[in-house]
Amino acid sequence: MSSREAIQRMKSMREAVHRGGGEKRIEQQHQKGKHTARERIGMLLDEHSLVEHQTYIAGRSTAFGLENKRLPGDGVVTGSGLVDGRQVFVSSQDFTVLGGSLGEKHAERIAEAQELALRTGSPFIQINDSGGARIQEGILSLHGYARIFRANTLASGVVPQISVILGPCAGGAVYSPGITDFIFMVDNVSNMYITGPDVIRAVTGEEISHEELGGAGAHASRSGVAHFRYGSEEECMAGVRRLLSYLPASNREHPPMVTAGEAGWDDPDRSVPEVLEIVPDEEKRGFDIRDLIAAVFDGESFLEVHADYARNVVVGFARLAGRTVGIFANQPSVVAAALDIDASDKGARFIRTCDAFNIPIITLVDVPGFLPGVTQEHGGIIRHGAKVLYAIAEATVPKVSLILRKAYGGAYIAMAAKGLGYDRCLAWPTAQIAVMGPEGAANVIFRREIADAEDPDAERQKKIDEFRESVMDPFVAAGYGYVDDVIDPVHTRAELVRSVEMLSRKREEHPWRKHGNIPL
Ligand code: HXC
Image (cartoon, rainbow, N blue to C red; front, side, top):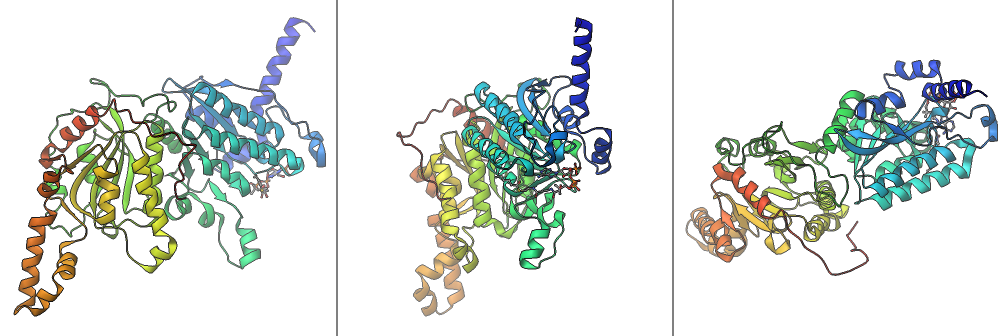
């Protein structure tokens, strides 16, 4: 073969790879409102930055009719590329080739991208659009999944791992995303479930659609499986790029900083008088903690995670004087911000994500306690709530708490206590720190006095006022040294900036152990 012919052959091989399952199937994919594997990579990465790996890999199985269906690439595109100039590794399943099903070589290709991400300390992003285990390849396919799950697990806490579900992701296939740090889903495109509607109908008789069972809405708001939900693939990929801007490439690095003069920079000393309007004086009146976050942190920098799940806590990334921070906040507008099972899981998981990736944690505290009730008790609030305490106590990143209003009982400890390991605890003058609220406290301690009094209501009120002054007052806690400073709310931003900066070179090591045993 002449060199010209060889080059021509190379070009037609490359074209074949880029065609995937062919024009007809690409058209079908577009008709479903979906993009192809390569179009999605194009949306995710900086232009022309993809460096493809194992481009011509092909399945070797010929079982059960596969002999005529072997295609180079084996139904997935993998490689490295840049997002805002920073290296990431990516895999993108190609539904036009055998339904994106995962065979031996398809799995090998993904696993290699995972291993390279780990070896080079780079984030790994997988785009899933697949009919699951390639049925014809049997054990080879299952072995492939097993390898991917292991690679996901070994990379956990070392490099950020992001799953983008853009099509079916069913059966055991869901567990690779399930192990990763973040799951993105798109309405009417993504589906995740262990068993689909047909199986459910056969087993339980229940009728449910794919979307209701395992669509983006179901997983973003009910199961908590999805961290981010979008209306289109384009918005979703922009969301992935945005998330990456808050994360370091690996656990050995710090997140990128926005510095003075760059887009997004915000004055560290900016006073925030608007917070006085946002947080009502009446202690029982709710407010949206996200308004406070928007006022205090760098302008427009808040990226909420798990926005529609367990809304009684708010978690997400923001910037404070250009530095990425993780916010773990109570949400007084939802069930009075009481911590329940789902909120505990959401909070604990987020804290551990921040800790793994060198992101300081700031808590914003206005919490009456853990949610009482039989459902909570029997659902295991003890072991779920324990996760928050454990995650905070164990985290070695800077931890700053700010008590706005209520901080009662175990929830005070979880959200704010220096005894648990918060490096710095700040309080607004309106903070109330106690084992329980003043009404409950007066009723327990002075039950007899109140009952025996000539005017029980007046006596109760007297005891409540006394409790507020002698026990709950933030200067009482400050006097013991458990609140570092009682700050003017107007200076909240500057105080938080200084606290995080002061802690930015924090080093903390725990005694050697194989690993702790967090209550799962
Ligand atoms: C091999 C598959 C496949 C699979 C789809 N295809 N899934 N080939 N193994 N798992 C093929 C189809 O035969 C078809 O090929 C092409 O992909 C497109 O599929 P369609 O059915 O035409 O597409 P659509 O109508 O959009 O339906 C998509 C689907 C459906 C809902 C995903 O294909 C489906 O139900 N597939 C089977 C899903 C499944 O049961 N997978 C195993 C799950 S268990 P042709 O050539 O005919 O066009 C599992 C265990 C993993 O994954 C365990 C890991 C631990």
